[in-house]
Image 1: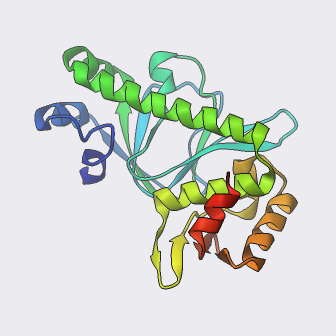
Image 2 (image 1 turned 45 degrees about the vertical axis):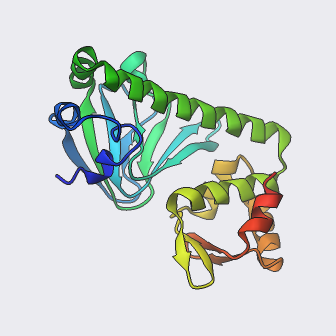
Length: 225
C-alpha cells in the first residue's frame, strides 16, 4: 500500500515517522469506480477515510430530491471524521466522481493513537478547523456573492487543488458534470451554464469534457470577489 500521499498531507506531514507508522498500521484499502458510494446520508459509521487517488464528492439530499454538494475532496484529504467525535448518523453521502483509491481507518484504532500520541489529536483538530473555515466561507459566498462570482471562486478553488499547467493556461480536470458543478455553487444548471458561457466569451476560460482550461486567472480571480 503506497502511503506517500498521506505522508505529505497536512494531517500527517508534521508527525514523526514512528507516530505515522503507528497511526497507519491499521489501514485498509478501498477502490471505487465513478458513482460508487463510500457511505450514504443516514448510515452509521465507525471509520474515517483518506484519499490516495481520485476525487470524492460530499453531498446532501433534500426531502424534495434536490441535491447540494458540500465539498469536492482529492488526494491527501480525509472525510468521515465527524462520527469519531459525534457518533450520530452520517450527515452526508460520499460518492466517487472518478476512479478513486481510499484507505479506511477504524475509529477505535484512531482513538488509541490519539490517547498514546497527543500530537495526532492536534493535527486532526487542525484539519477539522480548516474544514469548518471552508464551510463558513461557502455560507458567506451564498449570502454575499452572485452566481457568476460563486462559479469563478469554485473554479479557482478547484484549480488550486487539482489544476496543472497546460500549453495555454491551467487545466482543471474537475470530473464534475454541469449539474454537479451547479450543486457545488448552490444554483441552477441553467444559471451556471450562462455564467460559464460568459467567461468563455470574455476569453477567461475554455470548456472541455468535465474540465476547464483557465486562460486568464487574474480576471477570473477579480470576478470571484
